[in-house]
Length: 151
Image (cartoon, rainbow, N blue to C red; front, side, top):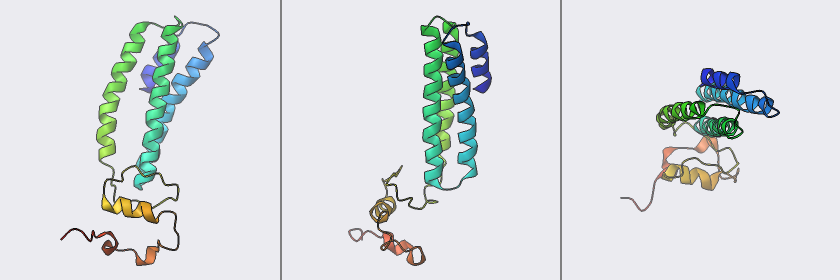
């Protein structure tokens, strides 16, 4: 994606908007690479998902800058179509990548942002998140997550 971003920036005609558009396109393409590296370097689910959200945001910002360059008649519409195609290819890989994250490798972060509360385990962590007295890592075991209604 970075190579395409660089090609698009090279093709943008000189204009008052060129510097801003170029920095948006290249900066966000580089952000995507950095956040992928950050997500792969960290094992905690919530940290990986935080990086994933920033990746999605950077891709949208990059796409919007490319579309803006075409709207200002500074770039060829073909570049917009190429970027859309590349983003769709990336999106499919991105979704598969996120689904590979290990949801069980996580700890509460006291910010109440949970990316998956669909399991009883995650719901229990959410309840405990803001109460340091209730959440004791030394006494944390699987029995804390049993559902009394299930038998």
